[in-house]
Length: 137
Length: 216
Image (tube, rainbow over all chains, first blue to last red; front, side, top):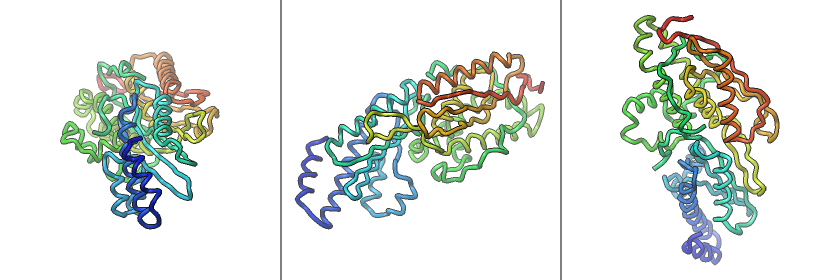
């Protein structure tokens, strides 16, 4: 986890109410960006897809949330009632067993989040790719 | 399945009938993240340029493109010959196969992958697995895959399931040998990329064609 992210989380703890929520969303965008980049760099991963359905994103249509649809912010992070759910959808290379890639990505997210409290990490393979063409640039 | 398995056959066989369009649901446009099969076809025609991030970043579109690309590779030379001999036949075949591909890109059920950490919920979509099975057959040579079904509770770890596929066979090839080879390739791909317990792999050859365009 980056120093900036750790620092911003420390700042976040000192705030409260509306500002707290706004900063939390901002932090989650940064965390999602960090996770997206790390997952893309994982062996066997050929692409990362938006984990949040388009329709759901439209319903949640607030500017900050829409930022999560940016190409480099594809991992969905949802916090509710003290529980964190992280979701990532990926394409994997047929050259590496998809099960291995799945576990590697799940463990990567787990280690990146550290002691984040109660959480669930959902990783889903949506395409096993043998074309060699990157799923996302 | 590895890239080495993707050797294309020397010539393609063209079925005359749609690949099981009647028993497959037709997907909504939403399944292609807002794109249509026609738009994806146009994109393929343009050599996938200019790069369209909306398509390339959609798993559903990628699955559909993969199937459409494979279909074109298998049939390109034969299509011309066959269309001259039997006008209308190829339209039926293409539309049937497109329906199958379109139906199979729906994500479907989640197929779990185990992990010792209970916080990690890992899965493959049914569409990803079906796409993998389709390529295992289409890249084998001598046949064109039709329908692919995972029959059973794929969402429960350890629960035996049945794989049911249909295919069209090139005339002259041994049905038994080709079916056995297809079973082996599908079994290998499933064992390599999933934790599914496969009880049987049923292969139905529902059409046979000569490469010269005459139906046997």
